Image (cartoon, rainbow, N blue to C red; front, top):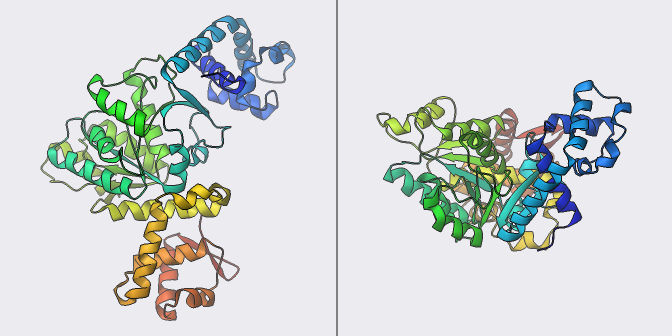
Length: 408
């Protein structure tokens, strides 16, 4: 495994972050000032030799001078990362790479570089076919463990990638349910990508790195520390199109993941449980605060379908790939199912199913009500009612007399 110039620049950037005071805000200031055009240029120490002449604040200037002073240490740390990457068959994924996850690209606070081990192609598949995170208690009940494995298995069978944190309990069940299915699974770790934590999950780690993908923003060799878990949870939520909470107490890291997902504008689903069960009170509180009740994999499929429809509208080039036609996409299967039902038994169609068809029509481009009536063959009175409902909920908008999908 050769380390390319670009990957070495990625490792230098990570080493700079880990060994100096140069944080993401500082890098952003350097980019906006034109001193660098890419984070990779941070490893070009020669460009900072005249730092005293830069038109930047004193604090940032001190950080730049600190880079030059610690050049030897930074290079040594980056070389150590490279050695561990080769030894453990680890790769880097950069925001400059084409397969950098779409969900990371459109959100703030996601890592410029992260590390992976396993199937890199899953990153592209997730953007095309969708993803859902499945999280919950480490000491989950048999009910929650059963649900985690069953939901993950059925969703992965549809091509949806299941994301979790490889902890004991719920995470383990979710990974095992999905890993050998078409959608497979991604485990987000709190330490280096070669650090198996907890050690009891060595068997799961082996399966995931063979059939799925392990990622971490922490470089190779980094130990698992308690303070890294909240950051890991933000990546689990960030990588996913929606979030499934199987079980959570009132004080739980699972609630952090739900909070991150909600703040990112994603649907949060909670498996219903007894209000008298202490380990489920955190989840029940989420429902009280507006989370959706998880009753069926169809709930998640609808949410993922909507996310991919927006993605297809906002970034059509993402789908200009022959592989997109071959993947077992949750979007394609759901739309085909609903359209077949509309042809064979239109009277049995629910409003939500008709809305799937409306959104699919509008993903092609804006349409007026007459054009929608013609293509969908739905009575005007019913179609107009559905369109008004979708407008009120913010799913579509009126653009000069034509309806269009709203990108949120």
